[in-house]
Amino acid sequence: MTEKQFTVLSELSSKTEIEKATLVAFYCYKIKSKETFTVGELVNEMVKFGLSKPNSSRLKDKLISSKAFIKAGKDSIRIGLRKMESLEKDYPNLNSISEEVISDDTILPQDLYLKTRGYIERISKQINGCYQHNLFDGCAMLMRRLIEMLIILTYKHLNRESEIKDSNGGFHGLSHLINYSISKRVLGLTKDSEQIIDEFRQLGNYSAHGLEYNCRKGDLDKVKIPFRACVEELLYKSGLKK
Image (cartoon, rainbow, N blue to C red):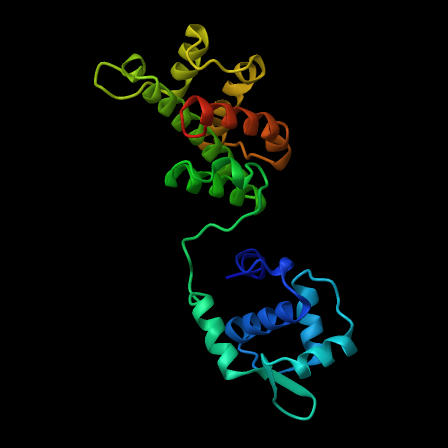
């Protein structure tokens, strides 16, 4: 697990100074096999996590008085056994590769997709994660996929899914879904969303099939706000949000 992932998982930024020091020391022990610290070393590790640099003297006083740490030498400390056992229970998979996608709200805010459906939540987190880690082609393809999923779910919610199935019982492609939905006014999207929704399809198609095309951050930045607005509309139209 990366420092960034652990920061999000542990909600590090919201902790007190001594809690931040404890969690950083625990991470360093588990990931870097560093068991003891001088105050200066711990301060440096906290800065690496993007935390504000604490006052060394003040932090030293807090560490000495804290029940979480014990002395490990003349100038060094380590996390006490009882606290270590507690942290092991709180973060049991710190060393393992987790399937949990940890990301910031770079494109879709968390409160938009939470409590919809599990697979919608996972796709939304992956969209954010791809953008956050510069995986722009993957982000574009997942954005396209989410739009397609939400259109189909809207038809199902309206009991009109038969209108978008082919002779074999499968769903038509996204281009057909978009054109049919707009011409028949099925989705009831705003004019802005109707005008731009096909751009999400095209962007995803370029990333999936364009032999010499690579999606760039600027391509996504041009559409990420209208994409968020369109997704929100479709979440309501599909009955996933009320």
